[in-house]
Image (cartoon, rainbow over all chains, first blue to last red; front, side):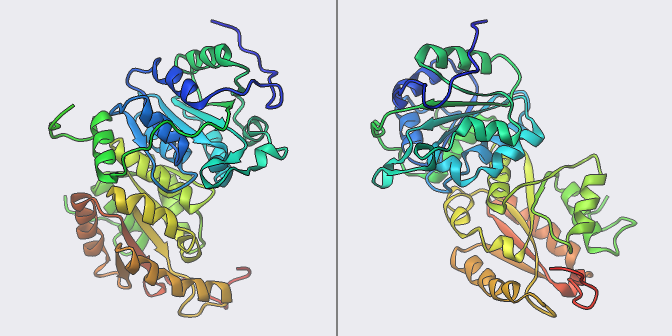
Length: 208
Length: 183
């Protein structure tokens, strides 16, 4: 197992690219559920290819972690990954304490932190004003919370999170590049496809 | 077995627990309320349920929505003021995605309320439910409560519709101002 530094901080972590990191993540996946938080986080997830195991949020800002927690509680043998932005996570910090309390071994939270509310005009979020997502998560009780120092570090941490017990919180600093393409805005289709990806529907799908 | 037969049929919370089990709803999330206490205590005491508090009602809705999409049925317990925080997530998650989030709302703000904030937020509850098209059931009588629960659970899951149960003080006894020592 590649050793992973626990000493990275937001300030000394490399500024990476969300689409690149999302591609790196998806390339490692098999049957894991991925919940894409509202905005560019799920636009880039969408742009990596529409896996049936991906759920794309079109609203309910801040709920990627709770939705991922619900999936993890429903299917303890499947890993669930909540992909969230810093602005979104800041809206629902209490969910980190809930995750810590329940401690699902199959949940991994990945935070793409660009320090801005990018989609509304790039206003600063609290993470560019001193708040540190990893410190907050550790304070909530998530001891396996870590900054990805660079791309190689991100790869190594993801490998570990996909093969060992969670819950995990992995934070990555990213640049201000907008999402590559926008998610198709069809909620019932998104939900139906995700449920089939979760084997939560009995009937056969019309298509893969 | 029928959903109506049990030794605890004389309590509203017993009826809820019976209906949850009958319809295989085993994930219970809540933000606490004093009126809900016997129900919360009941699900914690019963190993059938996974019961825990969320830090906000929005969070609980997200958890139950995620669980249902992955094949597990859940419910959210809250009080009126908690429901008042939910308009955006209901309008952007369970309603458009057609996810049957079940909500039990202990009704504060009426029939003897002593907290003016509760009295005002109570007036927002039904207009919010009506305007986003969520069916809700006024639960006021013990004799019809099991029937409401049974049929509404069936319909919620069959039609993939979020559904609210407003637990009136007429059913639960509510919160007695004369006995209350705090809000």
